[in-house]
Amino acid sequence: MAKTIQENTVFVIDDDEIIRLSCEQILKKSGYEVETFASGINGIERLKQVSPPLLVVDIKMPELDGFEVIKIVRKIDPDVVIVVITGYATIETAVDAMKMGAYDFLPKPFTPSELRLIIERGFERWHLAREAQLLRKQKEEVERKFVTLVSHQLKGPLAAVKQYLDVLLYTCKDQFHGETLEWISRSQARISEMLNLIHDWLMMAKLDRGSLCDRNASADIGMIIENIVEEYQQLPSSKNLSLSFEIAPGLKPVCGDAVSLSMLFGNLVSNAVKYNIAGGTVMVRAAGDDKWVHVEVSDTGLGIPESFRPHLFEEFSRVRSQETQNIPGTGLGLVICKKIVDELGGSIELDSKEGEYTTFIVKLPVAEPKKEVGSAEETAGSHLTEAISGENNE
Ligand SMILES: Nc1ncnc2c1ncn2[C@@H]1O[C@H](COP(=O)(O)OP(=O)(O)O)[C@@H](O)[C@H]1O
Ligand SMILES: [Mg+2]
Image: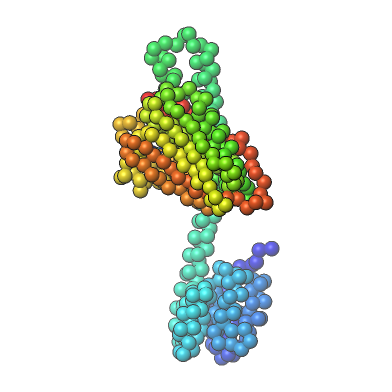
């Protein structure tokens, strides 16, 4: 059950009765409710029932001292603002207490206005932290609702429009010529771009909420690569690309689920296809040892300019050049790749020469032996369609 918050209350824990009484008098005069405790144990017991914004605690006490009180209080009530009272000789210990989570300290002896000031500041801090917490919750709620809105209210109708256009083209093929046909094809391409954007956007939101990758699963990376490369091999290619893969024998399963891993390598292969030149090659190699699996996705395409590399994993960033201007994309694929790799405890690096080649090197940890091997059914998803339209657009 949630604890009651007593919004105007200060708890004072001090074995010295005079301090307890004076704190009570001074603070009550300023309009605060005050509860005093002669020992840490009593104060902690009460803190388990109610939550005050502020706790004043003496450092030097018999039995449970101030440090131990802070340690326990931080666990049972992380939001309470703690002020420690300390003697002159113990300034360093007050600093230590602040390192443990106390907000401020009040050296003894203190004047009523010094106490009031520090308590006022403590309350301000508590209110600010509370507001920030509320805003964070509201932001999360808005984001969650937005993702649902995007997926249901935008994706659905767009997919339907795309289907209508497909049907229109298929059934009334003979009636469309020249410009009309061109307009319909362009509409289809733009809708595909929007659907890809929504897809990537939703994936990013899922990754940010930590609900996409499953680190406890394990997957056969060889199967995943084989599926992706074979799917691209079957696509009609206006560029005449040659795609191949090499999987080292005895490769260990990697940590992660087949869906995220397919998305990761689907994105990289999609890029290797999209940003390639006519007659170019795409090669995916996987090898490893007992701890790591290395996957290299190489192409003989446009290469990535040095100046763009610092922005490679930034949202919506794309190389702007004559060669790339007609290739569709969202600039989110590599951001998603990086998030997946980070989530799975791996790394992603780049080796590229402009106008010659690009190689992405992904390193993933080998899974614990006990885990079950996941299916590699999932494929590169929307990136496959993106790569096709990328080819057709050239
Ligand atoms: N293999 C590659 N060869 C050349 N350029 C690439 C390659 N992969 C990525 N890029 C560049 O990095 C940009 C970002 O890639 P990505 O995040 O996948 O977005 P998208 O492909 O949707 O534009 C691309 O727009 C492209 O300019
Ligand atoms: Mg991409």
